[in-house]
Amino acid sequence: MTGVGYTLPALLSVPAVVVAELAWLRTGLFRRPAYWVTLAIVFAFQVPVDGWLTKLSAPIVVYNPAHLSGVRFPFDIPVEDFLFGFGLVTLTLLCWVRPERERSRA
Image 1 (tube, rainbow, N blue to C red):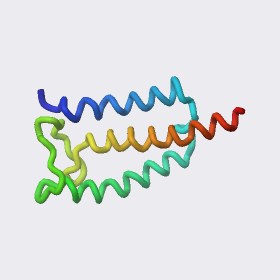
Image 2 (image 1 turned 180 degrees about the horizontal axis):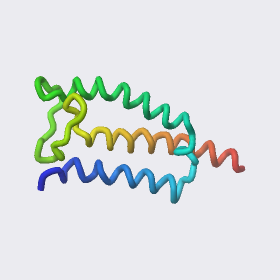
Image 3 (image 1 turned 30 degrees about the horizontal axis):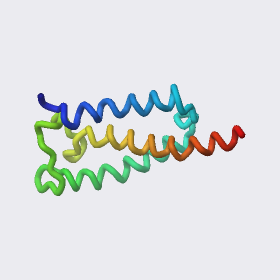
Image 4 (image 1 turned 45 degrees about the horizontal axis):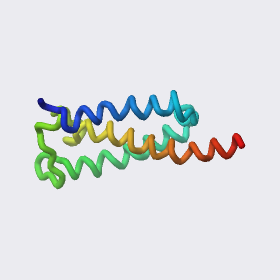
């Protein structure tokens, strides 16, 4: 089945992280402007680097096409990379902010 290997976990990572924040961690991270600025900075660097690494004309990183959705944007970047990037950065920040929130409650 096309796209299951990488696409399905990538798609599931986004709601999993969002639900973890909204239902369990409740750090308020999504309400912080600094979070959205951080994501913009991460993606601003991800686009040229990931674009260079995955460009179809001379790839450095090669994905098995059977494990991708086939959607690439921009610069031949598999959209799955952005989904995992969101999940990774957001979950890392949530784990960083959570102890800070707990200390302020004590």
